[in-house]
Amino acid sequence: MRNVLAAGLACAGLLGVAACSSPPKPSGGATALVIGNRQNMPAPALTQAARAALDAAIERGDQLVIVSVTGDPKVVAKSDLACPWKSTEGCKKFLRDNLAKLPAIVTKYPADAKETSLFAAIKLARDNISSVPGPKQIITIDSGLDTTGPLAMNDLSVLDADAADLGKELKTERYSPDLTGISVLMTGLGQTVAPQVRLTSPDSARLAALWTAVLQQAGAKPIRIEPDSLPPGQRAAVLPVVSVTKRPELPSPKNLCRQFRFNEAQLGFQPNKSAFADRNRARTALRDLAAALQRTGFNVVLTGTTAYKESRPGNPLSNARATAAKGILVELGVPAGHILTQGVGINWSGYHPPDGPVEAMKMRLVLMDPTCPR
Image (tube, one colour):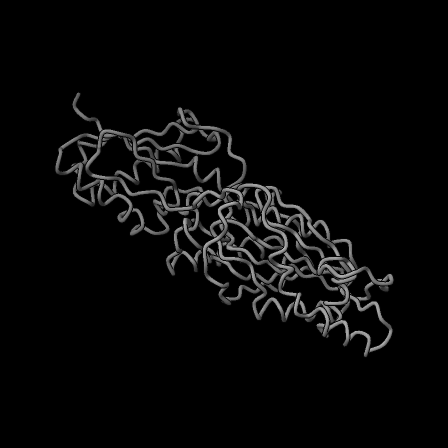
């Protein structure tokens, strides 16, 4: 049935073919093809899984929407996936003439704005297909490493956060679109090219878990994340700039005379608690700093912060988190008498009201200030 896709796209001008007679209104549903064609990820391509999903759309005669993933996503094309001819032979001829051009669709619309937000692109896709009756699906070809918007991952420690809790927060705070009745297929997730760093296997798994949780909370069903690889290779330098996402560097014992910041995900705190979900994560994050404090004998001030004003006086949560971090340093050999703790809530110089749960995570910190001799 791929002849139907070729015919519909050709009539819409997407394949560079002359316009046909007006096709009948689609009898099926709607498909949104959400494509990242930008720096820091491989060139987009229709993987086997994406082709299969499009086959289902073709058979139904869906309406098609194509969304370009950038920091400012936009709809770049629309079409009907319905054959304009009344005869099977006519559709077969269209297939022979145009099927070879089909893969070019996914590379036809390079990014025209800097940065990237798959989250915003999915929301835009939803807005353009939600009113169409019948089955609806979103197919993404993107690495999923947002650099702007509510799910920005410039700091990859967001992948250490509780995925289910983050998905719930995005929904509760009304950042997530309502994807009820929409299936989502993700391809290319976590796939990168230089200058973006290659994700480790654990981080790739965490990225998949994060997107699954976010989409589940938004109501999407079913959700499929396919491992099909996109073609490797560098991207054109003329494509707009996209920030490199990376994990924060661990403290260097060579330079103790500065402030170190650890967010709640790096330290493995349970959401809105001072208890650790993963104590070993905190030990790993603080090991080098603890060794340097032991060697130099410096004192250190630990300051707990929060993303929002604490409801109880005395900033109990931020105080408790600073105390919990002290416990880890003591376990790692730093004398307890060399560590001072305090909780300040939102009253610290780097605070700004967060826009969404990811930014909120970056405001929930334990600041560590060694007292270096002058």
